[in-house]
Amino acid sequence: MVDLSNLTGADFQAHLNQAFCIHLPSLDPIDLELHAVTEPGPRTMGEAEVTKRRRPFSLVFLGPPSDVYLLQATYTVVHAQMGEMALFMVPLGPTAEQRMRYEAVFT
Figure 1 (cartoon, rainbow, N blue to C red):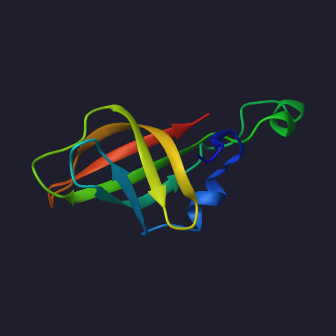
Figure 2: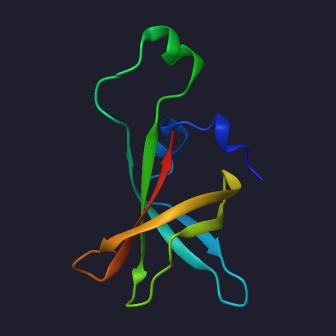
């Protein structure tokens, strides 16, 4: 399992529009597309504090077109290059194409 504490937004930025597979017990895996990687605006922490911690960021994924969606929970997510990780994901609401948006936040 990937150590999430070492990941940054740039690590995910390289994998925009790629599939991240969610493994669910007793169900077929679901592919989510990494849609966006965002970082907050100007830093609000002092420079000394910034050098000790990574900059917060969030990931937005798109699910497949469906009226069924994942609940807020921690899921095992697998990416071909990045490996397996546990992400706490929150549904944000569907797009016009009925693709649920999910967010994972890293602080």
